[in-house]
Image 1 (tube, rainbow, N blue to C red):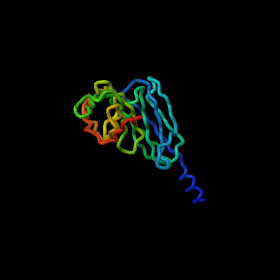
Image 2 (cartoon, one colour; image 1 turned 120 degrees about the horizontal axis):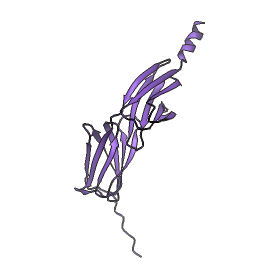
Image 3 (cartoon, one colour; image 1 turned 180 degrees about the horizontal axis):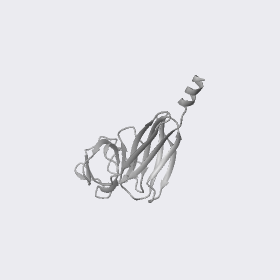
Image 4 (cartoon, helix red, strand yellow; image 1 turned 135 degrees about the horizontal axis):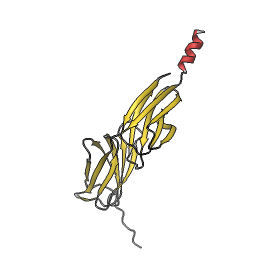
Length: 192
């Protein structure tokens, strides 16, 4: 009987109860679980502007990420959650909207066009593409500070350029990178 009771307790479902503050815009709440070294989506709920509370019930114990997303790709906030058997976690997640202002150059000259791809440096599903204007600038909303990996692709680059950047401080947060000359393969046209 004791073994049966222990088995029942070990399979007790868990829950996450979240209140969102900091924005009144509609948001999408995606709950993701870590499975086989990948994030797998468990459930997605669209929250209208008037709803700021969400609950995810009947969850098994595990490592989760709650990813809140606005309308812009950079409006994301990821929060890790670790659930044990039978846990019922209550949390308040505060979104602090800010502005990310960037300027990319290549050998000191504006990097015309292309794209910047940001993703969190920690084990996190947060990722977003950003278009680079013809003068090498971009201006986007941002919901999360921290360490980010970035990759730049542009017509002037022979290969993508990658690096790590800390996005911290008061809004607007500045993102300025000068990409040095690259060693690459030069393709010559064949003579006929």
